Image (cartoon, rainbow, N blue to C red; front, side, top):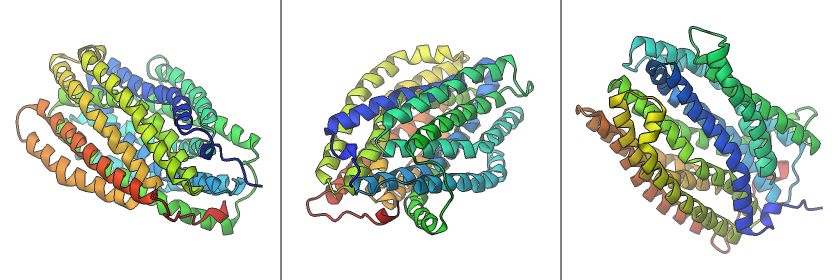
Length: 456
């Protein structure tokens, strides 16, 4: 009997908006806790906030690498479900196995490579030492992060966005509640309270993973042993999408590493200001993230079911939802910029720099959201290689050279102009690329690639 794939049957706007709202609360908590982490670091000292800022590329790197596995598992599962192949415990076990083994292998590599790369920063030695310690603790928690990502992604791929959101909300709140205790009250390492941030983050991921596992068990999708024959087929399917996704994120994060290095060379005040802007940008993009989390399984199921009309309607509905929210959020962010800089307790020069950057970011994050949506769309429609190439060209042919040129001056305030300018240019370019691929991949009569659907 063909399983009911609700994302191929329910009204399009209701499917996107409903799942997006379900994801929103968990996204608010996740990004809000990242914002709080920056606030906690600032409460320790300006140097602590600068150390935390140096680790931001590492945080993005770990999340980006985990998305390689979670996006691949989610897309394969959604496409097969839409094509009529029921999910099985084998697939869940294989996805968890891929997440764990990938996290362990990459963790061993990063434990050596990340501190060596961070040593290239020309930051204050004490600031750099604390940043390296925090980075090592974050890397140690990679298995938990990868399991969190792949487990919640599979629930969303099955059409259970509310279940994934409830589990993430409850689990992440545990970490949010524990973090100030681990930083200020009973820090396990009093000489380095920033470690408490890493431990609180990992606790939230672990609790969420346990709650998701319980939901999967109730669906009969947990337990049993790994079957080697189907494992190879599933790992191959994961790799076809997961490797380009991970490489796309690596390309982005390599540029983020260079940006942070250039900013850190401008002094502690500029580094602290950039840390505030980075955290606020994440908060401003929660609507984008929530809608993308809803859009990916929707496109996957309908693409697998051979419903290109619903794919196009879903993408247009998602963009319409985000556009309204972008205008509202951008206005609020521009008006609230001085208050945000004051909230973090930045010293005078750093506060002035952060205020100017936040106002510019209010415009740039709209285009950043377009880029994120287009990249996700290219990946789920089977063009991850195009997303990788386009991303690399814009970062290393446009952003990085422009940034190094501006860095030769004496005014650190102009550095973010390069970042914002690249985001605006890239947003326009990716909008055109995404529209072209969407039209080609969903044109009437286009064959749908359902390779691997028989092995769910």
